[in-house]
Image 1 (cartoon, rainbow, N blue to C red):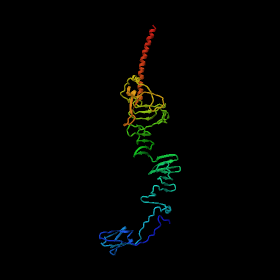
Image 2 (image 1 turned 90 degrees about the vertical axis):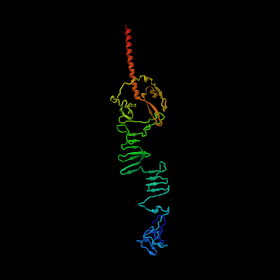
Image 3 (image 1 turned 180 degrees about the vertical axis):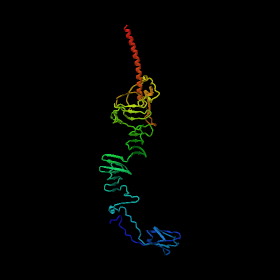
Image 4 (image 1 turned 135 degrees about the horizontal axis):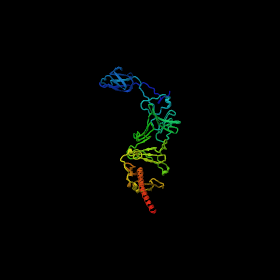
Length: 410
């Protein structure tokens, strides 16, 4: 039979005697050899043999007397009656796979180290677990470390492979099925969360809804949105920012929204905004974009309003607003835009202009915008004023024409 480690060592009895000097108070003495029981030694004190069942006990290298031996020089001696207990440890590098043979079960207690050098390798089964000299670990074969990281755990399969975690009957997995990547929480009503610095930043709910910087719906009233995004810092930054980096406006768009169910409905509500005006954006079937706020179209019913009065005249003010052509700062083509400048409108009709901060509290970016809907009603009021003037002038012209005709007929 093959041996593990060094060649077998034959044990032989080597006589030995330990001498001790009693002092009348010490009961425990240290032996030169470890012994397993009182049957492996014979003890004499002052030439009187001691009863091993009552006079003393032994434990490894210690003999303990029931009563302290009297004082004397070497008046205690212990005679060993069995061979020395030997612990034979294999020398490093002397144990080979042939020495182990076939091991059905391998059980260890405490820490088990298989290979204590950085470059040691370990293989369990033909295509089981493989640890290479670089520290990569492969399950189902050697880790090829496709990403080139300093350490890699790779699960390999012929057509599919997965890394799965399970608690009770619930499980989740990170899998590759052919060319398809799957990340799935298979638990009933389970969610998937993503965190940084021990704080949850995003989650996918069991209903398929997506939450960013929040764990609950943020939509104002009605059913919650499919994607819920919150800016938790209250720093003036946008909760959602989409940017098209194309060098010209014709190369792409920032965001596209389509309602496949009712796209032809002129009142289809695509974007719902909440705020002081509870504003809404509508995309009708003709492709235009309209912004309705709670101060006008959404709450146009007279029963929703108070302090109703006729608006002041706007014709003279509207006529003072200059209409200009311009290019936007990021516009590279030469097609001029036609419109009004907010600062020009503010100087004449400040009630038609709003001021907002596009930056942060620390680095504000104050920008002016024209209330487009209010401007439309100001233009409507101006048209009404023009009609009054035109009607008055028409009456005057008709009266003068009648007088001229009467004078010519005399």
